[in-house]
Image (tube, rainbow, N blue to C red; front, side, top):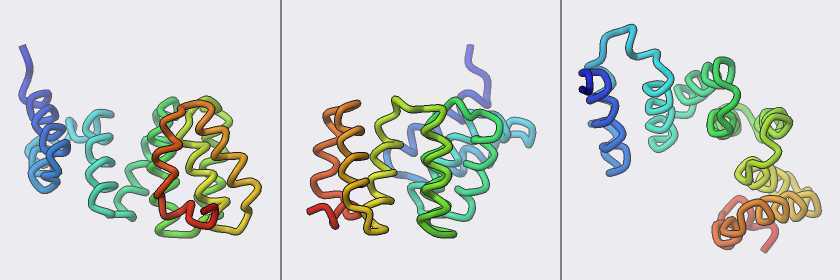
Length: 154
């Protein structure tokens, strides 16, 4: 039987999938303080912050997730995205390079490194990183075709 916290988390995830970010956040807010720090709740919170472009909040939550659960590559990607928007591209790139040490087979880390390289004028590096991402997950090619950060490659 599912407890109240699990029901709220499931409802929050459902709202997130529907693009109903305020409702997803309201589900989290109904939890007890000690339930709000569970990994599932923090991941939901990070996803909400990412979708709503709440970069400072995302950076805080993603930083905590990276420190406590570095084995999930999405935590690193969230932290890099938030850092790029709150600090700069080189700081985000540093995070992605650290993530790459742990998650060499994660296509989206290579993809994001390609974006960083393209945005900082390192076109050959961007092409190489993008090739790595596509080699790992061929469907990445479709994402790259109209991804604004890769515009310098077009």
